[in-house]
Image 1: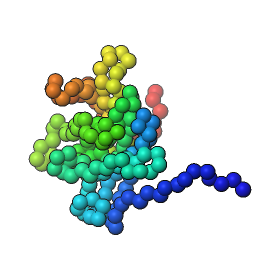
Image 2 (image 1 turned 180 degrees about the vertical axis):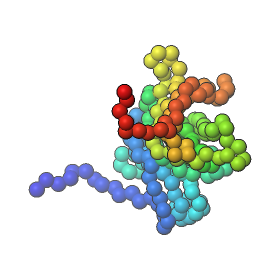
Image 3 (image 1 turned 90 degrees about the vertical axis):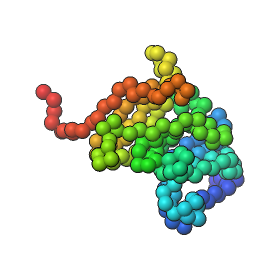
Length: 194
């Protein structure tokens, strides 16, 4: 009878309340598995409210680094998606912080944050606040094939409407990122076009 020839090292993460995973990826450059999500466990996260988390394990399940996020320095209450950037040199995270969509770029080897961007609808006011939801719709094209610029492609829900946008990423010292185009998908039909 065949048997598994690998040594298995079970890893437990979490606490006594709720944890959910919205991010699982493998980084072949650093040979790491990275897991992220949301925790409400006071015996896993620092408090019982929503905290985003990311952890990195090597191929033998050794803990390499871990991060909890608060609504203080880097507002990230939930990690809902992640993937490597197009060049494979950094990790891209999609999530929510202060109820807004968040993009974050991290160095996968050390877990250091390279960039943090939060998006707010331009017509939002104190009384008009959209409700956002994020899943895993994020892609960072480090070098566009046409103009060699870096673009971040986002997709999220705003007030039950699918939003998709392309943002030109500029170095933080050079100014703010520029939303190059945005689409809102708000009317669905099964009728055939004539």
